[in-house]
Amino acid sequence: MEKQRQFDRELEDLKKKLIHMAALAETMIDKAVAELVQRDEKVAAKVPEYEQELNRLEIEIDEAALTLLATRQPVAGDLRFIVAATKINGELERIGDLVINIIQNVQTLLAQPPLKPLIDIPHMADLARRMVRDSLDSFVGGDPLLAQSVIMADDRVDALKDQVLRELLTYMMSDPRTIERALALILVSRHLERIGDHAVNIAEDVIYMTQGRDVRHPKTPKERPADLEM
Amino acid sequence: MEKQRQFDRELEDLKKKLIHMAALAETMIDKAVAELVQRDEKVAAKVPEYEQELNRLEIEIDEAALTLLATRQPVAGDLRFIVAATKINGELERIGDLVINIIQNVQTLLAQPPLKPLIDIPHMADLARRMVRDSLDSFVGGDPLLAQSVIMADDRVDALKDQVLRELLTYMMSDPRTIERALALILVSRHLERIGDHAVNIAEDVIYMTQGRDVRHPKTPKERPADLEM
Image (cartoon, rainbow over all chains, first blue to last red; front, side, top):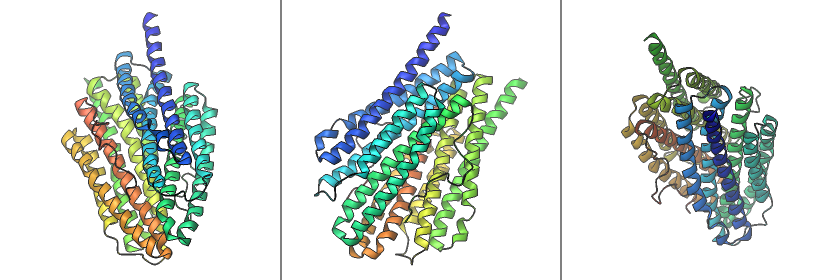
């Protein structure tokens, strides 16, 4: 009985660490894009620190999961939960890496005058951040329907990415002086789209975990978005 | 005794499946870039089929690993090996996705006359393929030194990516008619660089597995390459 309660606490602790990782990742996305929109480098000053914390948490979660697997020898749902945790921590850590990439592009952009008012990119960032939150909520709540909604939302992010590309290509073609900035914005949109992909990976792990059913590779032809539709 | 032998066979089977995934991934990288260099769409015709096989193998490995964890309750090295397998299969599957992205860019490129002779991109592809092979060999042989060499090789791939970017920016800026093709080539180089990143992830998992030491987040400043250094 006491042993079971101890085990439950350890699982709860694993869950809390993942929620903390997701909260950090969301804040990082928010700050990186706010820095771009507000054109103020101070806005995202703490992002590299958060990324370090994500790195630490990823390792802590792996260690805790291995210890649980070795000492508690869980089965069924608990086993799937723990293995899912060791996959989801990696997804969240990579979201942190992508935000660092975004910040680097933003620094390129802030060194030059603004190219255009930004609408689609902040919108993409909101969608991506929401996907990260929902994917983690679906994990915590064991909610495959919420996970499914994350998978659906990915289409909107992909559509925005294509729209950003098309618009910025016209800038580049009409004025070579815009090429560096347009390319930096294209890369920001691609990093955001990849953040959405990581949220989808988490959602797929959740569906797998909750239903024992693998949705990671649907058979329909629309499996992976085309990368450069132009 | 018989039980132990059965367990060893199951671990061996897991290993073989991962080796098969890596071989498929290597072939896919090879074919995608050969299609670009030879300007012949037939060269990579089988790549989507291989990608489907990678997807199937990823799921099979997760299933086998969960079954092993639940029924054999492994500890120590075997436990680390099995958990590493459930991470490495995801890395290899994503390499497959990246090759599909490359093929999409290649199709854009083959629809237009060649922009320039290709040197750096085939070189990047060779390096990335070699990294994938070495990372898997290091896993199979439990060889942390080989894994370390994969991590070192990543700097060369990153340097080539930056070189490709700089060269293609000059094309774009001097002639807007090259923009679409230059952008497609930049994206191909970025997909190759990300394939290298996945090999690094595998290598880091191997070092962790073999040494129980986590090298995934070195404290040195040169932790993540700058994304767009221009």
